Image (spheres, rainbow, N blue to C red):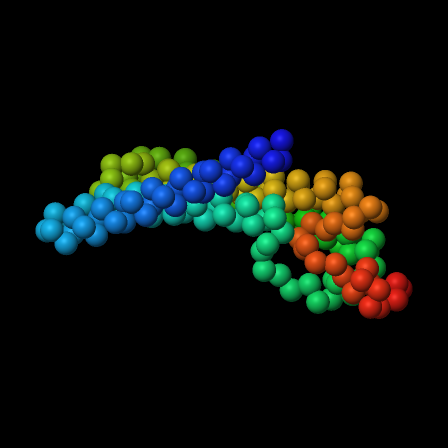
Length: 173
């Protein structure tokens, strides 16, 4: 299931990026010839918001987000996994609160129009709860994967790198 979802994420991201590129190109050409299409820029901005969330979820799934793990990498593997699990619970609570607040904001903005496009502004604000749920799903997938492989392959939730303890550079405490 995770592989199918990852492929759908890539396809959605590629399609969004292609549509954004075409919209911006068309807007530039039309502006050059004296007939600006304001709605195309608005739509490109809306799609870019969604693209950012798809990209963030993909980066979370692949453990590619930037992070400072200097201290956690010094911990023994078991302690590091427990710490990352506790951090995941904190992040999950944050994502759920943000998703709920984003949903409430979406309901408040459903009558508001987005620029000159005629679209509801709810299409912009619903990206926040949807994106938070995508990030939460990626994080839970990594959490399950990390706990299943904790003994055999030493996977973690947020990092692909092996710790100095696992690499044998520092003795296990």
